[in-house]
Amino acid sequence: MTVTAKTRIDSKKYGQLLSRTQPMVIETEEENERMLAAVERLMAKGEETLTPEEGRLFKLMVRLIEDFEQGAHPIPDAKPHEVLQHLLEARGLRQADLLPLFGSRGYTSDIVNGKRGVSKEHAKKLGRFFHVSPELFL
Image 1 (cartoon, rainbow, N blue to C red):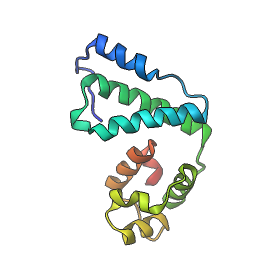
Image 2 (image 1 turned 60 degrees about the vertical axis):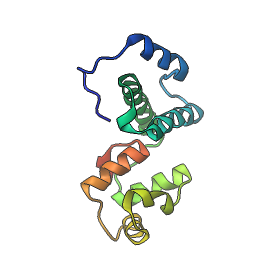
Image 3 (image 1 turned 90 degrees about the vertical axis):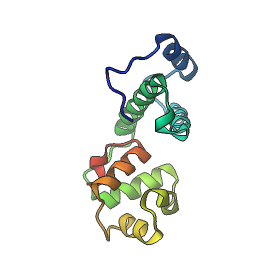
């Protein structure tokens, strides 16, 4: 999501979005799940179709989610595939949920099991998918 500081937003529209979504510092798993659901709704809409106001709200919510998850689920220094396994388990996901990112079952399995390294492009996709820094996978 690339929203530049030069992108003009309509403060009234943005205020309405904020009022509906009510983003705030996340303190519980329930609040985190609510915020994740809101982010997923915006992602489903498609990056190209987001209004400037939605783009700005998206960035805010992702930042709030990242802040919460870094504190609530700190990941010690680990190998990229261990981080991936942890995130899958913590979110109740399976390898099959990563197929859209990697394209094949074999490749996905190799990544998850540490038999293959994560490319920079895949690290970015994983970062967006899990709402974490791509650096965790490199």
